[in-house]
Length: 79
Image (cartoon, rainbow, N blue to C red; front, side, top):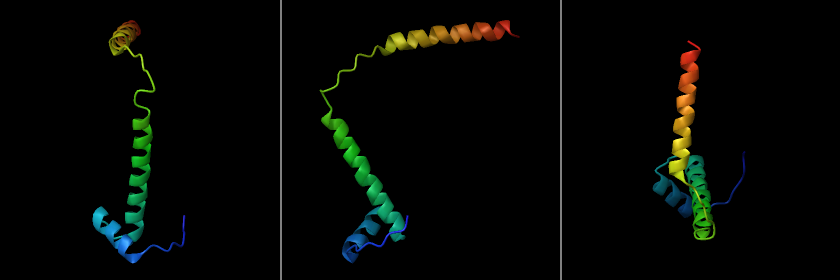
């Protein structure tokens, strides 16, 4: 999307320097993506201790191994 923006030259230069990009567009996109990523991380961190996940990975792994054995038996029968 095209947009006309009034960005202070010193700020844009600093963003280009930090991102290592020569292109103004690429440096702005990188900065915006990083901003969004950091905001999402903060939201996830804010959930710490508020969500209880009762997940038994060992049971899941056991079920997956059983399912894999069944698939292997079916494949052998079909040969």
